[in-house]
Amino acid sequence: MQAGKIRAFGCSTFPAEQIVEACWVAERRGLLRFRTEQPPYSLLARGIESSVLPVCQQLGMGVLTWSPLAWGFLSGRYRRGQDVDLAVGRAALAPHRFDPALPGNAAKYEAVERLTALAAETGCSLPQLAVAFTMAHPAVTSVIIGPRTIQQLTQLLDGASLALGDEILDRIDEIVPPGTNLYNPDDVWRPRAVGDAALRRRPLAERAAA
Image (tube, rainbow, N blue to C red; front, side, top):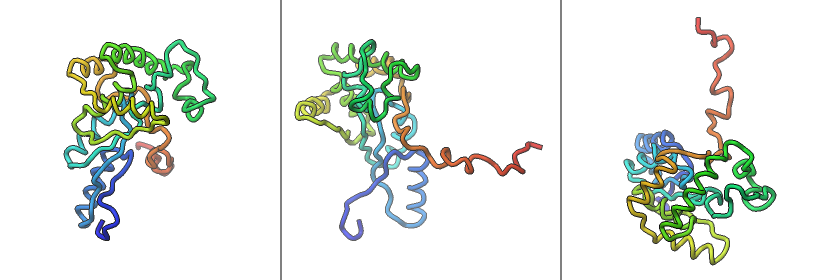
């Protein structure tokens, strides 16, 4: 930034505590701090509403959310009772997220059915409802979309210009409560504090309580 090569920089998929720590370190050392955070956020993954989004608001950071369609789960392609080809598309990259036979996915498929019906009542498609929902949060600056066709781009942009009323947002809250994740949106990355066993285990000689 000081060299004039960039205007701002930020972080991606940081938990709230790391965002606060990074801000504290920057201020303590007289360094430039993060200006944006880039977290996953969707109708099915609302966990960041509990801490990440409020922290970003408090620190005056922009928020550029990604995966508004929940890895394609909100594209309308995956429905309860329909066969899912786990060898193609997004399902091939992460079959555990789409396999209807896995008990952990039952809540997602149930939510998709209810959200699809709500979208129809609202007069929009499920992807449009998904994008409009993420833009409704006051902490969200922009939504990163990943269309593969012009048709998908047009549809998602229409969702970005859709304003959802409080009644619709209340209905969404009933389907997926605020701050709730129906799946782990960043399970491809594990914090070092969790992944490194040595960081969560005392030396053997110090493990006894007495």
